[in-house]
Image (cartoon, rainbow, N blue to C red):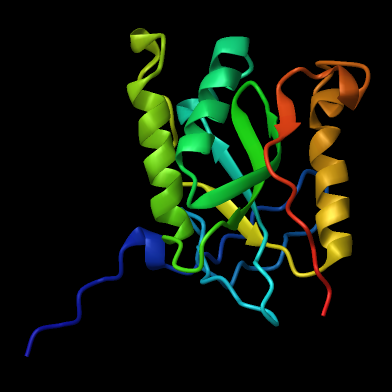
Length: 186
């Protein structure tokens, strides 16, 4: 009988104890480090469409997105990818935040829809030397309350201000709302 193979580095539990400068060691990390986001299935609540907050990034976080031609390209591709609706969005230099919701009852999985429009954007990208454009994955979080939606949008729309790109959120030209995503409390 052969010995069990060693687990891969990604599956090992970290027990590192690197003390901060001048401080006590931190407690051991008892969960594996996540290399990619976990995409949980959408939860349906009382016949209301789920609203999902999504962040996609450029590969190696290169500042590719905050340009008029790219803003227009993104909006055009989101309109073609009509099986999900994009609500509020903010295009930052190296990442994009947006809210979305399924537009049809039998909508594709969020990951499939994102892959579709990212592919459309890449195929139409006006600067071939900048390819590849996208990180392969994305971060998503399903919203569960109207307060969460309002708070998250307020935080996102102030992103350009926090990054010292503009003085006021209204001054950032690479943002908008394609569809009104209504939150309906039960």
